[in-house]
Length: 292
Image (cartoon, rainbow, N blue to C red; front, side, top):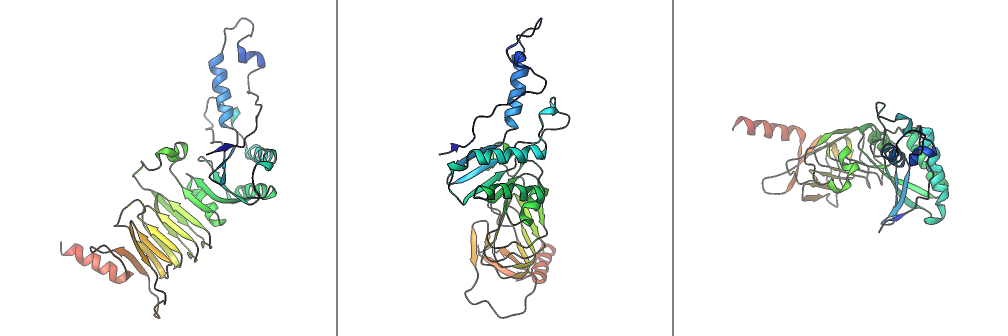
């Protein structure tokens, strides 16, 4: 059950006077449709803030293309930041302290500085930014690097969340040059490549493969939409849990005492997850193709 936290907002329509909205300009017929379009555009450019299932969704306005019919409606980052602060302070009595916030960017490109500015604004009213939903790879990288949980979606999925399960094509790989700390959670509709470590308490869920160019000590779930042919690869494999499609493997209670090598986790024809040295796995795959 969602409750709206957004207060009433008066908007001015660039290029239209009050008389324009009712068509009372001298010598001109009513122009309701263009005015309605402009008002709808301005409404789309408003920050949305509402609670849902014990968390708060902060939705940013989508970017307007420079070639749009009314580019004057587009907001600068300074205007968006100011609007966020105003809406947060207007509704600060409507939520409990330390409530988590999910940021819905709607395809807007954000860098680390802008994300930190949003986080600071939330912290001033005792809210905590936890997860960033985005369709932009640069925003996903900036958010993951800053330590936020990230879910990278397609642009269509962000505009119409009810269709999130309908897309079958994989997105382009998500490349992160960072170490994921405890509590970080990355979800991506494609392959995830991490140049760094996956620490205990962190997790990566990918519809494609997962490659960790470092130590994998958290949770990794490849082929999340059911593709059991996906792989999980790491320079040092010490996972809390591995999942490929619907198959699950847990780390032994007593880790084996051996020298670490780059390894690959895959699903065997018998339906179990097996971990093999990367070189051995490559040789087995090569010999298998040669014998076909």
